[in-house]
Image 1 (spheres, rainbow, N blue to C red):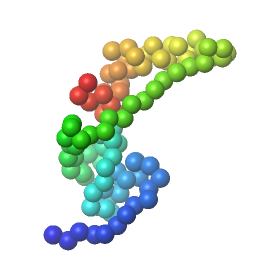
Image 2: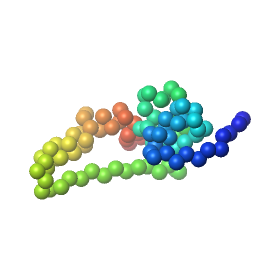
Image 3: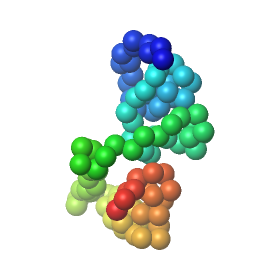
Amino acid sequence: MCWRTLVSESANVREIAAAIALDEVDAGIVYASDVTPEIADDVTVIEIPEEVNQVAEYSMSMTISGVQTPYAQEFIDYVLSIDGGQATLVSFGFLEGH
Protein backbone atom coordinates (compact mmCIF):
# COMPACT_ATOMS: atom_id res chain seq x y z
CA MET A 1 0.00 0.00 0.00
CA CYS A 2 1.32 3.42 -0.90
CA TRP A 3 0.19 6.37 1.20
CA ARG A 4 0.61 9.90 0.02
CA THR A 5 1.81 12.43 2.54
CA LEU A 6 -0.40 15.45 2.23
CA VAL A 7 -1.82 17.87 4.72
CA SER A 8 -4.79 19.73 3.37
CA GLU A 9 -5.61 23.20 4.59
CA SER A 10 -9.05 23.33 3.07
CA ALA A 11 -11.34 26.22 3.87
CA ASN A 12 -14.22 23.94 4.87
CA VAL A 13 -15.31 20.32 5.14
CA ARG A 14 -17.06 20.39 1.75
CA GLU A 15 -13.66 20.96 0.13
CA ILE A 16 -12.23 18.03 2.08
CA ALA A 17 -15.13 15.79 1.03
CA ALA A 18 -14.61 16.80 -2.60
CA ALA A 19 -10.87 16.07 -2.38
CA ILE A 20 -11.62 12.59 -1.04
CA ALA A 21 -14.17 11.92 -3.80
CA LEU A 22 -11.69 13.09 -6.46
CA ASP A 23 -8.99 10.82 -4.97
CA GLU A 24 -6.77 13.82 -4.25
CA VAL A 25 -6.25 12.67 -0.65
CA ASP A 26 -6.22 9.27 1.02
CA ALA A 27 -8.58 10.14 3.85
CA GLY A 28 -10.31 12.92 5.69
CA ILE A 29 -12.79 13.51 8.46
CA VAL A 30 -16.00 15.27 7.53
CA TYR A 31 -19.53 15.53 8.87
CA ALA A 32 -21.91 12.82 7.67
CA SER A 33 -24.01 15.57 6.07
CA ASP A 34 -21.06 16.46 3.81
CA VAL A 35 -21.16 13.07 2.13
CA THR A 36 -23.75 14.25 -0.35
CA PRO A 37 -25.51 12.01 -2.90
CA GLU A 38 -23.20 13.46 -5.57
CA ILE A 39 -20.09 11.98 -3.94
CA ALA A 40 -21.52 9.05 -1.95
CA ASP A 41 -20.55 6.47 -4.59
CA ASP A 42 -16.97 7.80 -4.73
CA VAL A 43 -16.10 7.57 -1.03
CA THR A 44 -16.00 4.90 1.65
CA VAL A 45 -17.67 6.02 4.86
CA ILE A 46 -16.15 4.70 8.08
CA GLU A 47 -18.25 5.52 11.12
CA ILE A 48 -16.39 6.95 14.11
CA PRO A 49 -17.24 4.85 17.18
CA GLU A 50 -19.73 6.62 19.43
CA GLU A 51 -17.42 6.54 22.46
CA VAL A 52 -14.81 8.69 20.69
CA ASN A 53 -17.03 10.68 18.35
CA GLN A 54 -17.54 14.41 18.81
CA VAL A 55 -21.14 15.34 18.08
CA ALA A 56 -21.67 18.80 16.63
CA GLU A 57 -24.44 20.87 18.16
CA TYR A 58 -26.06 23.78 16.36
CA SER A 59 -27.92 26.54 18.16
CA MET A 60 -30.77 28.61 16.86
CA SER A 61 -32.05 31.90 18.22
CA MET A 62 -33.83 35.06 17.18
CA THR A 63 -34.06 38.64 18.27
CA ILE A 64 -37.21 39.68 20.07
CA SER A 65 -37.34 43.22 18.76
CA GLY A 66 -36.68 42.71 15.06
CA VAL A 67 -39.06 43.63 12.25
CA GLN A 68 -38.89 40.05 10.94
CA THR A 69 -39.46 38.37 14.34
CA PRO A 70 -42.73 36.66 13.26
CA TYR A 71 -40.92 35.13 10.26
CA ALA A 72 -38.02 34.08 12.46
CA GLN A 73 -40.42 32.31 14.82
CA GLU A 74 -42.11 30.64 11.86
CA PHE A 75 -38.71 29.38 10.65
CA ILE A 76 -37.79 28.06 14.11
CA ASP A 77 -41.17 26.33 14.38
CA TYR A 78 -40.57 24.69 10.99
CA VAL A 79 -37.06 23.51 11.88
CA LEU A 80 -38.34 21.96 15.10
CA SER A 81 -41.37 20.30 13.48
CA ILE A 82 -41.14 16.52 13.10
CA ASP A 83 -42.65 16.20 9.62
CA GLY A 84 -41.08 19.41 8.31
CA GLY A 85 -37.70 20.62 9.46
CA GLN A 86 -36.60 17.52 11.37
CA ALA A 87 -37.37 15.29 8.36
CA THR A 88 -35.45 17.71 6.12
CA LEU A 89 -32.44 17.66 8.45
CA VAL A 90 -32.44 13.83 8.50
CA SER A 91 -32.61 13.75 4.68
CA PHE A 92 -29.38 15.76 4.58
CA GLY A 93 -27.56 13.55 7.09
CA PHE A 94 -28.19 15.52 10.25
CA LEU A 95 -29.68 14.00 13.40
CA GLU A 96 -28.38 10.52 12.56
CA GLY A 97 -28.82 8.24 15.52
CA HIS A 98 -31.20 10.60 17.33
